[in-house]
Image (cartoon, rainbow, N blue to C red):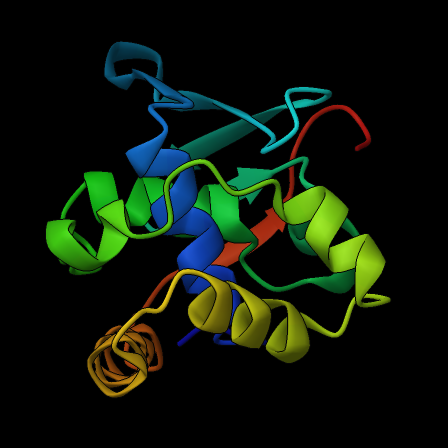
Length: 148
């Protein structure tokens, strides 16, 4: 089991990374490279069997799988991803939005849902579905090479 779960609001950030095609998978080397939503940073996710590492701030400092790790898990089929829901989160600058809301990820997500007139019930139901599966994963995460 994962030692520390991320906020559920990190799932839409992973969706954005996938929808925006900001992920470069390097399967032969067990690595992936993910660009941040504002393009200012590039994160590296690595893995070996059931242990994943990343140098994104959440994984590195907070000890939970950050959105780059969640996105890799979705691409690898470890976590489900509803492509229709994921596409709703394309083109969002989460860095700017999270700063605006002082890292209150719930408020940032609420703003996106409201401003994009999303079907809140179906979006939140999908996030809950993914989160429930996330809770059952027998994987571990840790600090990757290079500080965020």
